[in-house]
Length: 297
Image (cartoon, rainbow, N blue to C red; front, side, top):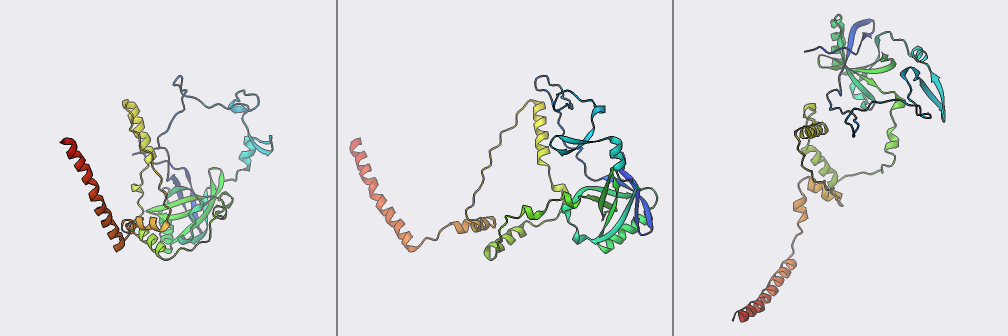
């Protein structure tokens, strides 16, 4: 089995203790089904080409340069060496600035996860940091230059090693106040809340990522297989959206109480009315039977 290649190598420093570490990608999309763009008429692959938006002429790679738009159609040109000079210089060190309780972690700021492991030497210091954080139930906030940008990293114990999540900056995370500004101030209590708690209780489980199936990938893989074999997949019925007009009734049905509640109680008056209808219905059939006898005669 080929050993994974480190994305970054450097040091992690806590207090005056430091040890060499390596970052490895924890999540990858390389196993997903990938498509190529083709020319429908020829079946050939289509390649991407940069063209001038005004002249329509192709622009060679050496003539392409970064630009920042300061006004409508007005740009400041940034040469590659200027951009490189502006990037913070990396000292290859993850400097731990603070330890925070794991309960305070806001996952909204999570960007990308990386496994953080000791690199050759320094395992004692690494294990010391890992176990100390685990015993104190804390995560570490560190900063360093990763992939040409200064980044804030959240480090937590994970199995035999550590996991490092690069964090989004505050200006990159949109405020939840805007998303929830139209939410009405409601307080649900009584039977509806009890039923909701009951429904949630029947679905309690534990986190197991192996049970999550990528239905899109599976469906596309089956489609590709069917195309290769020259067969078509059966058409699926369009789902019908349910429109419960009564939230309480919908909760009762979800809790398995719907059938019981749906049947109206029959009063004595209703029973009598049914009996009267049945008695009134019997004489109707006699004339038909008599008529049929006369025709047969």
